[in-house]
Image (cartoon, rainbow, N blue to C red; front, top):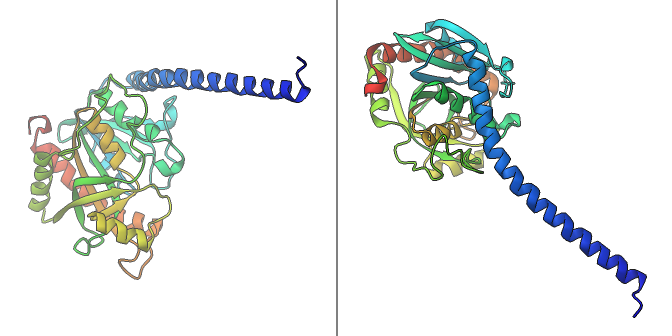
Length: 312
């Protein structure tokens, strides 16, 4: 029986579509396996490069938010490594984030400091954003202090005040989506007491000794880079959040995945949109953060001088 040309074309089209689908499935499965290997290899590759510059094994990692680089002035610096010098490492592109790893001592404690971070809104994946956290852990840090500049969602927290993070809300993609990196942690991670209560209390006690009041509250991370709308402010407040920003939460999730002890400090730099007549701006955020930076440095310096954080 003769087959029409149209039928032959249709059969060929179906065959091509099925072949393409099979190739896509194979390619996706292969990529998933490659990504798992590649991500841990990338972490190890970054660690290897850093080890060529320093053999310091940090006890504590510190992440500095926008305008908070004064903390570095308290460091007895051993080595400074720009992110741009590390192959495979994300680079900070935002003003106020210098983009360096700083290795040294604060109060006799070996530390590694992120002098500026990278953000999801810069176009990086969440895996890229948390790569520096994972690298610091692999270098030896088992405790991390994460700081940020944040907008207040709580009228009790005015600009110029500090808020210790007691819990968080993640309004962006989790950095744990995708194949699990078994070398770092388990597939499913509990999120109870992400922010270590004992460490949080020690920070509050140190601040109190300097007459610096520390509030406590819930921080929500959303994508940015635009500031929140008034409607989003209302939503975040209904969720139970006290401060909002564009960082920290996914870093804390990655740190929790690796079993690190975590403290989070928000520097309240502005009132969230709709909480006052003033619209937030990056310039005002940086200006207020720089004012608060010296107090933050004082707190961290005393904390690391007074306590052995690994024994808390």
